[in-house]
Length: 193
Image 1 (cartoon, rainbow, N blue to C red):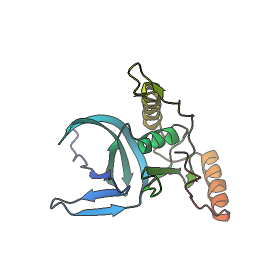
Image 2: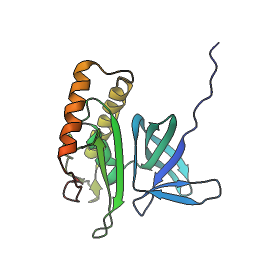
Image 3: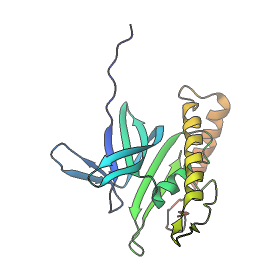
Image 4: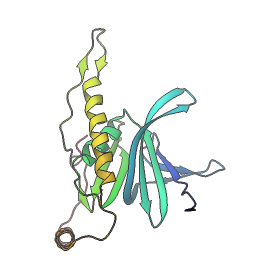
């Protein structure tokens, strides 16, 4: 009979200031600019909040035996941007998620790196339409994001967690060498949303 202790995640959320925030039991908040680790899970969930139900995107990161769960609104621009960036990853390595709020327009931005490489959107986002009532219609966008999220889940489930083969090690060494010789500064123009 196998016995064990289930890991309880440390919860973080993306707040209105664009930071990743962790609150302790007393309600004190600590803000962070990024989280980095092995991405081990993604999901969309419906949660009950003060103002009713809402959809959340949750990303699970593991680092040094610790599990971290990042939560944010699922139908937000920064959540869509994260899903569109992760959709192009074939082999997940160390994933770094950075979030911030751009002062000029007030929107929250997100940048995702996989093994140090800044990820671009894997697919263009379909334009928003207009429904019969004249309201903004994002159903086509929502369907694409839902489909991409399911594909990411499948790839994460099959992502190698054990030792790499020699070809992967050689490719990783080349990537790290290229990163060491390049200077990579993220600007707002680098982030596709």
